[in-house]
Image (cartoon, rainbow, N blue to C red):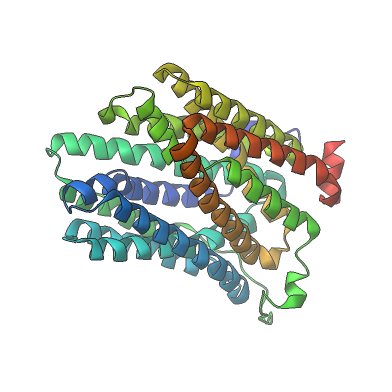
Length: 405
């Protein structure tokens, strides 16, 4: 089973995974069309300060972190995933017109918070649904495929926004209205295109966060959570890639294309490495991804020209493609089936808090010691994660240990 060719694996991926990937892609196109322009819109049209922009973004991300835990737990308690996923995507779609209608920061704050609530609601149940409908032997490929399609949206959205801004002479609000279309299509596709697996009838509902249930989350699962958190400290917000690009001499108008390049590499790598994770040790593949991240940080720390900076950005995208779907697979493999939503919720919460800490530390280092120190600190945390991988091998589940030999 481990020797299946990629073409054969692709044919075995359930249709629901393709639909969930397209749903993510459409919503990401909509969101990135808005988010790639929103800071400029707030500062030039609404007259807000950069500090206000930062506070709004911090509040939005914190909201998403809290909601992810509760949505995952609720999906396990209800024994249903799709309904919560639909609710989350629908809430995200409903916020899109608010950006176009906003005449002040109040409505922007409301829209951003509601949008992040929607993201928090749908994230853990969606990942648990993917694990539920995918055979264990091709789970890595399934997560990789969804991540690939999602990332296609991540670079298509900014490209569309750029093109439409040129066509409509920098009319932000018209572009925001256009972004409503893919968001609505995303929700409609999820409603009609995904069937949730049947649950055993008469199954008693239990509180997933009872002490007895949480005790069923194994040491292998908590090892994944810890490694994921330390790893996240090493990969702070991609906003610092944009800052480094501008610092390296890339014209301001072309800086957003740096994120397009990163997402292109990310998209190209996500499915192949996801499929590879079904045939090799997860720890080994994660270690390779960490090595790529260290290389990216070193290149970005030393880059003075835009070409070397672009190489670092490409390496960053490669490590994302190698590791993000892999972590989702590792959580699914190490958590009980009926607690997968809860497991994803706690994993996302801990990793999200680590991302806030990492980005804050990265900004502090950037302000006080320069960009080089920020990326070198990232490389140091990646090295620390490698040490954690070595120290945590005894916590791995038996099947993983067997794959390492």
